[in-house]
Image 1 (cartoon, rainbow, N blue to C red):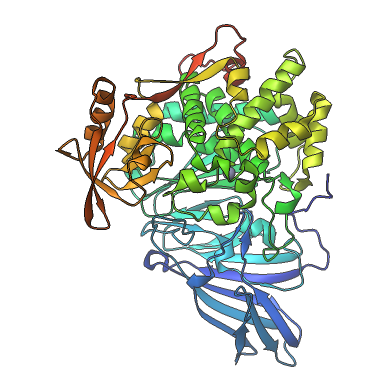
Image 2 (cartoon, rainbow, N blue to C red; image 1 turned 90 degrees about the horizontal axis):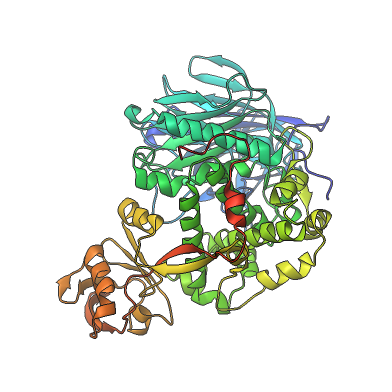
Length: 620
Ligand SMILES: [Zn+2]
């Protein structure tokens, strides 16, 4: 089981490091930070955090550190960046000094097409991620170093965080001393416009949604959505029957000017969505799984963490082999909790599952890259573009593990004649006693032992077959075993519709084998399917369809009419400025993924998605 790495300050010899962040210039996209670090005379190496627990990657944004200076006794100290490890700084502490002062600025950025964790602020909002403004001395685990944080906010801004507050004077907040790992795990959400909604009034522990928005008119969450969030807390409580936080904050940011994100922490989640998400039904549908996923991480990923991902500091490399549990099981439980809390109707949950199964069944890269490899290679795949995602494969350990864990759930139910299920596994493996924010590590063997305690089975073989497979098709055992089958028809899938109207991307994966942006740019084309075989590929831009100027609707109509049309679909495309004609030999019509009931077998899926807290699901 692993001894467990505590994130609560314990070491009696802990050294206090003062960190003061002046965020009064946040709207100009610059944060000023000053650290006072105890140090003895002689060589000193200071690190900027590199491997971040919730990123599973060595992506600490050190390129946005500027104005770095060190001093002791009021005199500057020269420094050298390490020639190999860009996250290490070497300096010599002069005789007679007992501390070093480090000063630097952190530069914020604008969200771009790929991941950029520095895009955390707008003119009205700042999400302070402490790893971006921190340094720490070599030779200590992150839970041995105690920080005394002070934060100065822009005038009149409000804030929310899981950190304990020691005192407050105007716009300056002094937080209680906290170990470095818990500090990095506790972002501060702040903004000119914020609102707090308590989800468990009068409860033993507080659970709140803290909303920040660029536009104050968007702070009011619809009351029926708040009811569903309350049910989410109740359903998660029923599933895990424990807590590993002192209280919990959903830090919800509604902004088009920060990077979209869902990031898990022990006692909070950093949930950032487009500004109009809660008032736009299409975007709301697409984001409904965000809170259930991030909240589940407080148990799966934070309290229980694979040993290879629980490193003592932020410099040691992580091993992502068990991300299909850390992220993949969370994605499955997030789907289950989204349905149980009414954030999705059972039909929406099934359509989501159908779309997941269909997209994974159309991954051309299945035959060369296993599910296991997508997890091991996560640290590079997170940063790959969406173009070529079928042939390359991306972070498929999220969606594909949903299919695998559904099959685990169904198998547990069948082996025990429906007396036990994944709910029992969640209680025993992820739940346990109530604790504060601590990490309890595990290995694959621990996980298998826990499954065997519920229902003996050759789980090693079960997982190996699904993780190492290079079969061309996705694992459908969970869907089939739960009494359903994947089918295609001309009734649209609501998630495909929502992606088209909300995000402007047309998904024609199961017909032409193509996804297309609103301007005609091909995002992905799947080898072996009609579009790719006609010569089209990612980065080309469709200009015309059957003699008409391109739009997603024109392309959809051509696909619909293909089943009653002997002629190929004629595409005019721009390839880096050169115009090309392509003929797509496709006559399958519109094919939209759904689940269809197999009336011969028992409906386990309905049972899995059913609320367990007794709250009525009638209105969902
Ligand atoms: Zn996650």
